[in-house]
Image: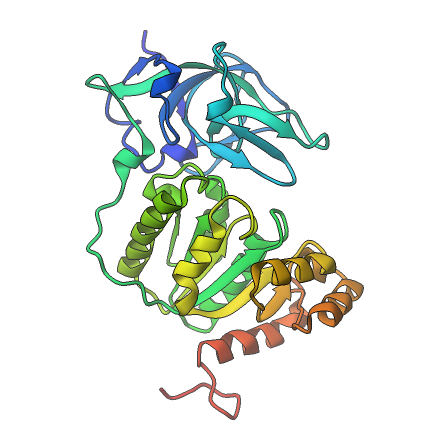
Amino acid sequence: MTDRYFYSSLTRISDLETVPFEVVPLDRGAWGSGDYVVCEVYSRSLGRQMEVRSGRSLELAEADLFVGALGVRHATLEATGSWKAVQDDGFMEILTGGGLVGRLTSRSLIGADYTRVIYRGHVCRDGRKVSMSDFMPVVSGRTFDIPTIMIIGTSMSAGKTTAAQVIVRRLVSMGLRVGGAKVTGAGRYRDILSMSDAGASWVLDFVDVGLPSSICPEAEFRSRMATLMAVMAERDGDVAVIEVGASPLEPYNGAAAVEMLEEHVELLVLCASDPYAVVGVMEAFGRRPDLITGITSNTDAGIALAERLSGVRCLNVRDRRALPALDDLLGNALGLWDGSGGAGTD
């Protein structure tokens, strides 16, 4: 009888569902970030689900076998973990809903436990392990030159993905062809799918260039990022809405991503968890955003304090009353309006 595997969303770039493979236990010295591995659920956690290739969520049961990818997570608000911390017993946790696996090293005491799994072997073909990097896209080398709305944050869960959805909707309503991307973070398909649902013509993330998370040596990240920018250039569009996951000050290579895209950024949006974090990121990162939004904008008090501390416009983009001001910012940044406030002619 052939074992049935569930395929996490980190396998969506691969052919593992259609082309046979073997499962071979490998010595720890042969492991690497992005390797596809088969794990068995040892003890599940209620409330923790894993995305399958479509992006839908599945609640795994004990003894289920699934294909995930070795990786590293370093989330300030939830958990940290790494494949490098796995011991000889082979126990790991599912560190993200996308199927990134590694040994949990710390976690917030608020929230559900992480589903514990045990390593059963690497996905192998012809005696060679299969990795996410084996499915890198082939690109023409076209230069990225798409006007960009960039969204950064003071931390994870600051409102970046929500802001991206709203901004995509507003740009699409202006008649623009919009692309969406998340260029750093830990693999989770739903974030970019939400931009597709909002109307983006195409969506991409670092998984598309073979990274389970963007925690890797900076030189490697820059190489993968260059490929991702070339893929975005081939998809083309009037504007790209690009989210930099987590915070640019965290070890996800956000600062490198910002630097590589900076010359194309027409509007920089900072999503903040609170007004004081706005100032902290502005001072530590050395950049002044054009707009502040996110959790800090949930109330008039948060908006007023953020604006007073930073001198930057703050809007709650989920509030319909803020949409005309948001449209003005977007339209002016992209040169869509003429001096009278109407549509431009060039």
